Image 1: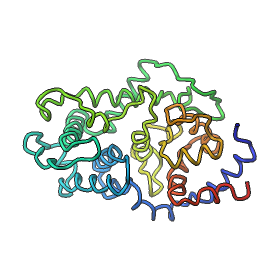
Image 2: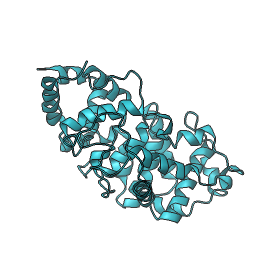
Image 3: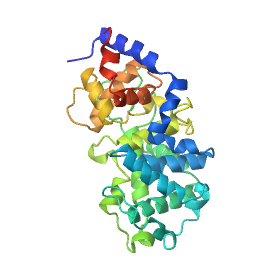
Image 4: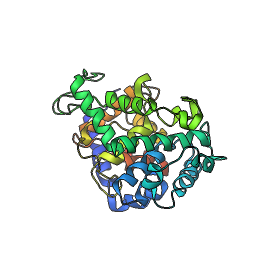
Length: 303
């Protein structure tokens, strides 16, 4: 069942009402975006955001405790801590730290990988930009998973010039290609490390990576940061959490049953009908409306 124009118009009116950044800022403390908001330096925001998004799965109270512990190791000097991270000496600080399938050594390896990125590229942003440039030079074909129009823009359209799935995959490939021998004693990539570096190559929705991109790319509205200004917000893909999936299924914004990259594209395409230049504009508000449990009465009232 496709979403009707009448339903779409109602959804837009409702979302415009709940998208109120001065009020939404109060919800930051209940979201992993809380952590990059503790920093002012752009590099610190990038690093803390990447670590926070990588671990943002499962119960929020549990993963936030782990993120808080990791960031506390830097004593407020995150950039210097990461650039000077010594995998032999500093790895011991991660002993006893774990989250789900991620052991302390896996988390230490994530910090080491970020060290290598900063030393070679200067910032996570610069590495990501290089992946965009590689995409353009390679002239990677657009993935027409869904029909796109000029009016709708497009996550893989000529109007963006970027195949975002390719770029994300190349970005993660680059991180996974870094030699982990200084951490593990051999160039290993165990399950716990790969969990922290998700790739869209196998069709997964890559919720955490898309969430990180939203933080970095969307304009600064008090929630997101707008630091990566070479990237248009129009190409972003929605982070598929359980709340977004439940709400969008109810609103007929997806025909897919299971979370996947294709489901994320389909939902994003419908949000692009509401906000072509900024389809993730409502993501934070809608997610926290889902958390509140009031989404059904808010979104169906008057439809």
